[in-house]
Length: 347
View 1 (cartoon, rainbow, N blue to C red):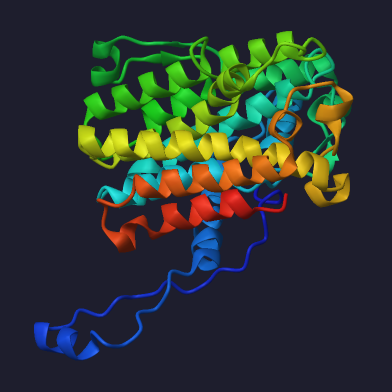
View 2: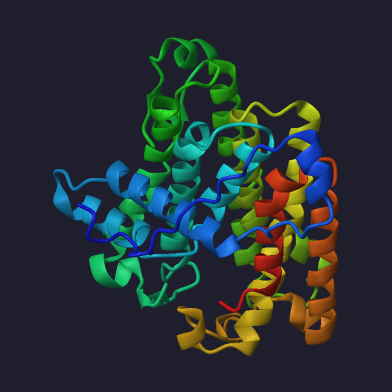
């Protein structure tokens, strides 16, 4: 176990010195060190990748677990788990409280990719620079691998409080059993938030409308397109941030500000995805380029034009960062950097 981990080079953490009021006055005119986003990403990605590798070991029957590990540990940006951790820390929590939830959202994201690539859905052959899951393990095993990540969760308030909840899906099981040092009611709230994000009010809703509009998009306008992507893409990004804020001990007001932030960057993520689909190659993206055009899907560049789509992306980025104004600047720096990264990413 561990052979599939990203081999990212570890970096030293920056330790802030505690200074007196007089020293602070002296240093006021000095330039403060900027936030090192690359070092932050390396540190958190290493931590998340190790946790994911430990969470899914090869058991009997080996094929299903190998299929799960194949997609879960295939790389990826780990944006969702890192957003979960950053949201936990911005409200004053420790990353340990958010790691199980961070892993859970990545498991569910992986499920959505496995199922999205199936012939009955987007019918894609390439994901993260590798053959898609069903191309390696077959459609039947790919479906089951996704279901194992997701499935349904059956729980009551009492079952979470007493630790007797039964979870068929690995993601929900992982949050419920691996989260420590957090009040049970907050764990329950996090599970409920995640369940809503991936159900018929979230990811599934967006996927269904997307499928119905593919190849039949003559009357698809911005309102429908936004519905698709708020649900299909933004819902899980939103859940990632909200889970971190809840588990980190955030107030209702903080959680809602971060929810708005996350919804904005979730939609931003999809707008940028649409732009990259028509401006980058398959080699650059690590997935099939131009597939939206081939499938006759409605996209933001198709409706707005490429330049207007880019302007819309910048607008969403600025609106998202405005939601962070009331948080401590140092603690909010990772979230600001993630918004900028999502806006300007190249793959």
